[in-house]
Amino acid sequence: MLNFLEKLELGVNYDELNSKQKELAKILLKEKIISEHKKILYLNNLFVWGKIDLTKNGDAYLLSTQTKKDLFIKAKDLNSALNNDLVFVKQKNHSNASVVLVLKRQSEFSIVLTQKLKGLIFGKCFNTGLLRQLKASQKSLKLLPVGTVLRINNENNEILEVLGHISDDLVDEKISMALFNKFEEFDKASLDEAKAYIFDILPSYYPNRKDFSSLAFCTIDPIHAKDYDDAIYFDEKENALYVAIADVSEYVSAFSALDNEALRRGFSIYFPHKSIPMLPRILSEGTCSLNPNENKLVLGFKIIFDSELNVQSEELFSAIINSKRRFNYDEVDEYLKNPIDLKECNYIYKLNKVTNKIRAKRLKNGFNFDTKELRLELNKEQEIINTYYESSTPSHSLIEECMLLANKAAAKRLQEVGIFRNHESPNYQKIAKMYEELQIIGIDFSPTNSLHENIIKIQQLADEIGLRSEVDKIIIRSFKKACYQHKNLGHFALGFELYTHFTSPIRRYSDLIVHRLLKSENEKMYNYLCEDIVNKANSISDLERSAQKVALDFIDRKFARFANKRIGYMFKAIIVNDEDKMSIAVLDDEIKGARVFLYNNCFPIFSNVIVQIIEVDLMSASIFAKVIKNV
Image 1 (cartoon, rainbow, N blue to C red):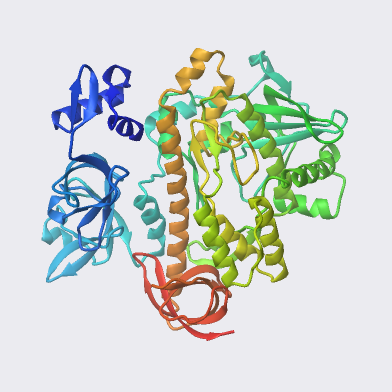
Image 2 (tube, one colour):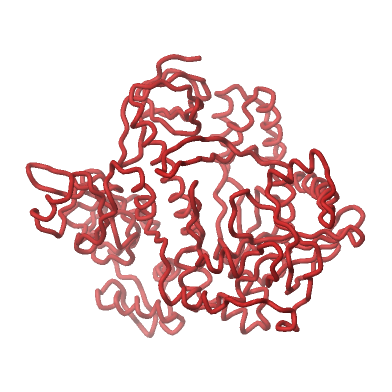
């Protein structure tokens, strides 16, 4: 849709539109937002499209690339538009406008919390904090306890579902999912398709696939993983790495019910206690998953290295494998430290040495960041019982380098148009701001013309003062975000000229598209699969961000629950953000990683302090505290 709207500003030929764009064009013509002359569509004067940015008092601004400054929209002129909706407005003057058409809802639903005001029950919106009248009688609303969480229809405020009560720990998962319009259950059509593929895989059924079932493939994943996308095997004699990826495209056909459901979800969502898969579990954890000692269909690359570990050849293969062993990261780390006989999987020791050398070569152009993943452990009532940071280990690095090699090999085989994982270089203003921020914490140096050299130097200085992880976060913040696009722009952070995602089709829709493109038998099929690829790439990037937000929102809610039961308690914390309005600290005590907003702070960033919990807002999952002392 965005691509079509951008073209309207210069004029677009009606005959060149796809079916969905033609339907939209008819609506815009009827509303007199656009005009047609000799089959060329033009945007009429005074009409502007963009996204709604709602304020706390109910008014809004239109965020648009068409105007130099945001247009102001009074609450009475919103015409039912809600926050982040894509709309068309008509300008009243140079700064004011009114909504004439809602093009696309950010969500069909809103989540509200029932509240009592002057004897009446309203719904307070989680996203905006604004009160909404509910389409239900006050008599029935008063039967619900105040603080009930509801999912309502954005068109008419009708109650669709009672999610639970805000006081219940178990409601957090439902809130986080509903806030971002996510659902756990699959529709019947996609489930029926998934069940159709339950059968044993025999090599004789697939004469066109290579039979690699005798090769000692293995998987290496987190200890609690249930779906296994990738398996590896290393042939020491041939100096060849085999990266085999679950061939999900064999079971999920383009434009099928399963495919539509996977595209709607885009990504699997990972909570501390469970996952919400992109594909039905019967596929993601069963038919497609590379479980040990089971024949599985795969698509992969055989990558042969020369004696200097330069890639000599990359052969795409369609095959059957039978994973001989399922490892987890912790045990592989232990074996790499204290080797034992892994029998047919002993090649892991040699492969580790190979990937270490490949990694060292890659980092001459790319970057190595000391990132730590926050992990939560919950009990059956979904209360926090433990938190810890998980750092990258040798086993993580081994698998990462194998996957990077396969992703690069896949990107090379894509045509000019496809799905690429791009990461553009940062702009000068952000880098200059980063240098200023680093000077404040004592990292001062003379920049050269090479950004790569500068960042390496910054990381070395950060190591010397024991702030590597914190400084790496500042560096990453100055970078642009990686995203999916239909044309290749390279990957700055990895130092790659070409890159895509190929290795996780069970949990990422982008990889499923890449698999189909690699398997397309001719250019006609390739182009067919690339239909509407621009919008798909944009949609997948949006879905990636929303999947991440769901998981982060849930974690914030768990921390808010923990803090709400500890009002007045004191904790060790680290100042991580010092802004004019309100500083932010992160707990670094028995519980780690919880963000707290500070009412008072006179200490610089990265100071170790003692904070006292003062207030908690369960609705916004916000914790407020005050600094007691600097330690």
